[in-house]
Length: 505
Image (cartoon, rainbow, N blue to C red; front, top):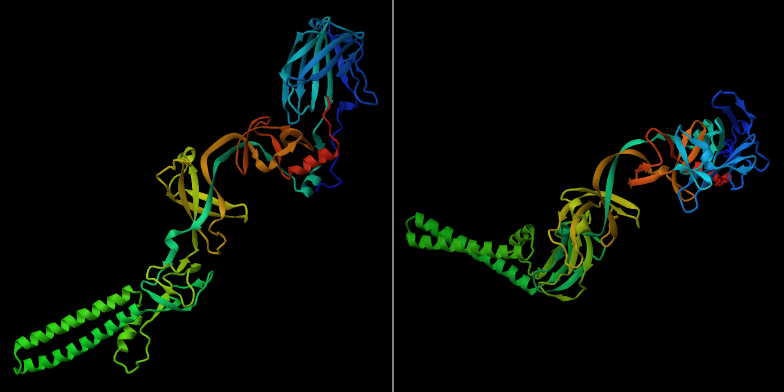
């Protein structure tokens, strides 16, 4: 906050050297004319003329300077008097120089219009300046001057430093035009697994529920299935047949080598062994297709000739095919399920998709592999991503295409169904004059920055062009090379308002 050491607003209608100054010289001879001192300000401020303007007297000659702005842009209107009586404006030649903070100067010429002299330029806000008047009347030139200030304050360097006020110089800036699109977070379809049992069965145990994390290969449920039992039994029988065929072949091979058995019998036994091996391979593949792991099939093969007749051949372990989280569970204990029943859905939420709506008018700004920023104002989070897919079709009703952006989600903050905004660079360009976006304040009816000249600070209304979060293009009101408050400008505004600034001409 501003400290008390910060000075108060320069008084409105500030008078240079505590008085209005002027001189009126004979044009031909250069000699003195009238009094060098002009009308002094009264206790209530500068002297006012019949039209409410500032009265600048010099002997019998006086001019009244007004700023007229009813129904037209602000303009100087000047009335001339001799001994308090109106003069014909055609008898007076007039020019004004307006000197503003920062060395800005406007030169204004005048022409007769009705009973006054009208300036040929707009007197733009704020009406805070030093005015130098040159008036010619009856062959004599009068040079008059006055000052007025508004929307201005004075702050020393120590006060600026303690309050964190920073100054920059206006000038060129590289800007980016940002296009914002709307969208929604969705699951990455490449990371979603739908778990089906592959055969009819009865659920005997459930080990995972909604929201549980699972690892690839982890058992999530147990089922009893007659189909599986039959497939296992077929495999065991094929193993026994292979074992018998192998023993028969080995014996026949020995007899054939000893020339006891004919070669034809030997070949028959070898063929029978090969058929048995094919059968074992086929029934084993059937078990693999039903979801059994190679290790389970191997264990079944190793124990097929044991005397353990209590082994449950119908038992089936339903395993997770990937790491992830259980997001759907459509099964209950003891339930009979079909071989095509989708009983679990597991999603890997390490990455998610932002599904973005791209209207036809914006398609020219979106391209594949383009970097974008995804934001959620609801959660206050953002992430970088790239356009992974841009749909080739436009909806007949929506007149929009779909784009997908893949987003890393290691902490699980991006939840499917969340509405988001997607920002991408529409255009990059350089502007001749720009100011920091945070420097701009709303003051009266203006968007302003506060320019600096020494210890003086004054609001300058801006005509603004393109903008982004960092920069605002200035197309009017501020020239390149001017010093302005770029940080904590709200403190300057607060000091001016606290000082009771008014709009006074």
